[in-house]
Image (cartoon, rainbow, N blue to C red; front, side, top):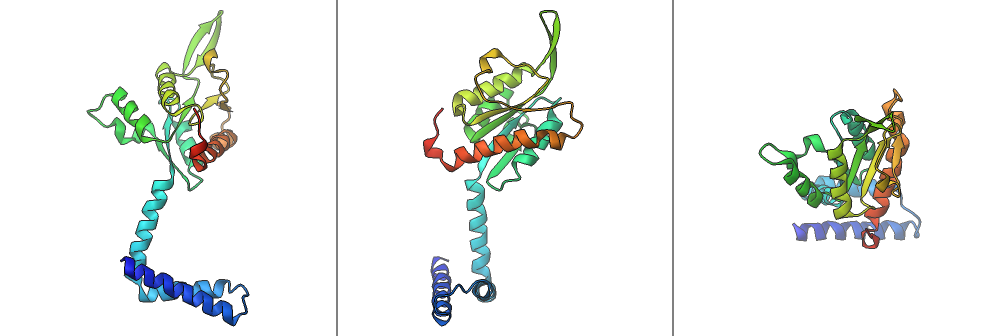
Length: 218
């Protein structure tokens, strides 16, 4: 296969040189691209098929793997977060509910430890899941287990790879007040619109960190 690929690349190079010489170094544009594609598809269909398979596998391996955690109450929000994050081809987001690390027979804690070792980033949806009373006033807070899961990712991956998307109506621990958190309006009936800005903020942060992994610091 390597020899055939070398032959293909040589033919491409030779054709580019030939066209550029004929056009006196002008840009051949779509004409040469179309001709090369037709030649490759016609004369080397099997090699091109194998090459596309290798390329597709490599592209998947280069994507940032993102774990999305949420409570069951906020599952619809988490699904929309997954959709919006994956608008960029460099991100592969997986929702906790459908993740194989939480398969039957595995404990939740074991699944979390496996997830921390498997994923490059973690994104957690802090919704107004439970109601508490603080100074005689009702307040809404995310689930305790969700905060614990976020803490695992934060401790292992660092604050630049663990993110929170929080409902405006949800109160969080004061210990997290120094961490930048994306927020959304849980009362907005248009969930897509409500999550547009916070998901874009998280997506940009992920891509910025993923493209420069050597500069990452906890």
